[in-house]
Amino acid sequence: MSAMTKKNKRQKKHAANAHALSAGAAVWALDPHSRNDLICHLHALDAAQNSGDVGEQEYARQAISEIFALKAAVGKAPDLEDWERDVSSPAAEAAAAARDRDAEKFFLNYDRLKRAGKLHTIRAVAKAAGLSPTTVQAIEKQRVKPQLKTRQALAKAFHVKVDELDR
Image (cartoon, rainbow, N blue to C red; front, top):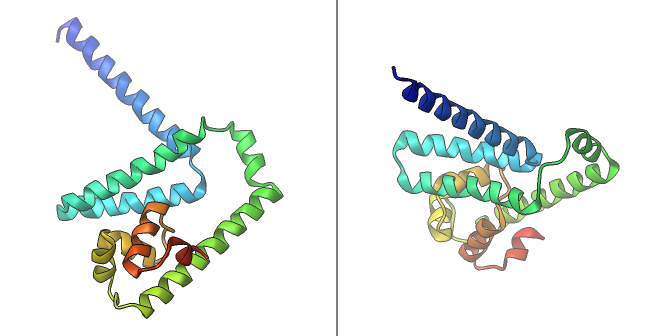
């Protein structure tokens, strides 16, 4: 193997390692809710790849990209000590409790609106909202509270305003 080939291999390996470290740092910087969303979407991506569902693969890719795009918009990742101090503070605990209450309200309203309407199956909700059945299933199993764009699609399918899902 020539010296140039060895150098190219080393550069590619270095680039791959740097990319993996960047990805790891990006995941570490996510808040716990976003990490849970990411896990859910990664499972959906695996299922879509295994089934060959190209549309679902694209949806999962977009959802994953959206998670990281939101983090990038917020700014750089916090220092670990700052992060530990922030998440264990009374304000963080109150914020987490409020987030949990908001999620609970959403899931109760989703169930109520689904029962009240004519969308009785996951497939019916998915079709009416323009979402994948995998996404609707994740919502119905309460694995993830959907982001605004998805809640807007659900509200349209249920013929209500988004705030009726969220209040």
